[in-house]
Length: 533
Ligand code: C2E
Ligand code: MG
Ligand code: MG
Image 1 (cartoon, rainbow, N blue to C red):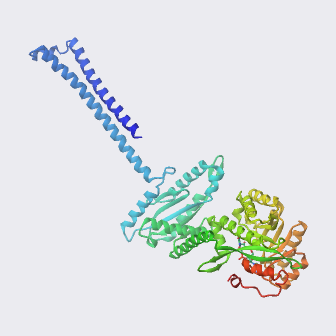
Image 2 (spheres, rainbow, N blue to C red; image 1 turned 180 degrees about the vertical axis):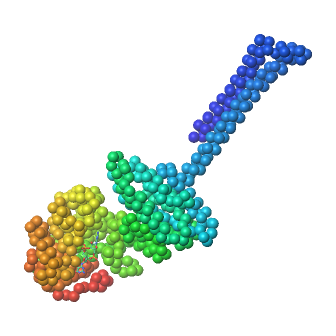
Image 3 (cartoon, rainbow, N blue to C red; image 1 turned 90 degrees about the vertical axis):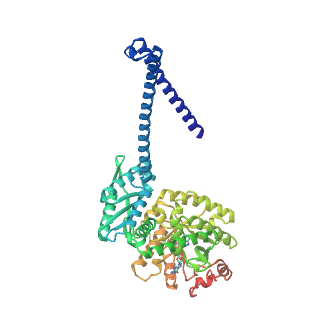
């Protein structure tokens, strides 16, 4: 790099010298031509000697050459300076603007907010809006980056048009925009503006003879709320935006101080959970599953529990959704499966394990391979494993789900459709995928009453299962009367507090030793936290 710039400088100097000498030679030529044509004769009357005249005229011609060279040089210099000023202005503008959309970038946005904060005029109010696009990723994935860029440019233009000239719209990066909005102590105006922006963004964007649709969610922070610096204001708007997303995409939400606390708590939960997975604090608990009507133990459902060093035993509803949202669910699941398989490989060989997988895991093309790897590492037979999926897992990409589940079934793993009756289109999925079992959700079982609508539905589900050659498990059996009724209807398996709650490994082994597969009836539900102690 350095070599090439040195070489450039040398060649530029050589060219300069060459041009300078050429113009002097041109001057000398003028003198020769002038002398030959006698153009200097008029001046000879002032000359005392001819050779002095020759010398003066030669000097004048050469001087003329030098003069022309200098004028040319200064013109060139002026042009170069002009180009440099333009380049500097352009570079300064590029450093403050987004190259794709031409909007202000984060730096210019910061400077704008900083200036507004510094003005300290009590009559001047402004808000920062954070605008996050919904469904933008699928546009990029499905239609390609060119479509993504076209969407960003179209939205930039719509946002620019929505704001008054004293506002500033910026693209902070990716699909995240921000707006600096001065207002006159009227929060309703801000809401109206945000809603107008969302409506403008929702208008279809033409692409390749078709159209693409995106939406937006907006968080608003008022300058008085949060902040003495732009970063804090943006953070507050970001917090409000996440709250708005939680309330449903396409919403608008103002920042409130409590949101920050909730966000901090969530960030701590995420960090703790990440550590918990590596420290193996997430452990398998085992809930018995029995065959009906004989109540013989046929296996256990593996249910995750977090043995928190300070907070005790934490149930999955507190951490599984966080693990799913943050992508930690795969590591959590594989750790749990490994532990459960190695626990259960010492148990009688007819006992099965049922494990739950989350919707996004079904989209993972390596799911079957990784499960099989763990089975072979722990020596647990695939024929003893059952994987439970919910219908949510099948909605996103049925093709991917079919591939993953069929790969598992091909090696002998059974697949159950969990929480049956709570999803969207149960019958459609029963037709599309080859399940081995359906698990009737406990919300149906807990309210079984002779002749009630729910009871009729449960009966219909059991009949449906039997006509499709699917086994049925009823979850959440708590009373002997429910058990009897389900057995009479031909339900194949039962699970619920009547037979035992989810318990840790040691308790499950005591359960096995005591031969409680048939004996749990009539016992009051065992308290999980006592069992865990
Ligand atoms: P699920 O798979 O439907 O599991 C059954 C849930 O019902 C368990 O709750 C179990 O303790 C509870 N249950 C069983 N019998 C009864 C009963 O008689 N009465 C009542 N009231 N409840 C009963 P748990 O352990 O809190 O798990 C809740 C959900 O969390 C599970 O529902 C499952 O969807 C999810 N989950 C648990 N472990 C995992 C895991 O390792 N991975 C994934 N992805 N999800 C998991
Ligand atoms: Mg389950
Ligand atoms: Mg269930």
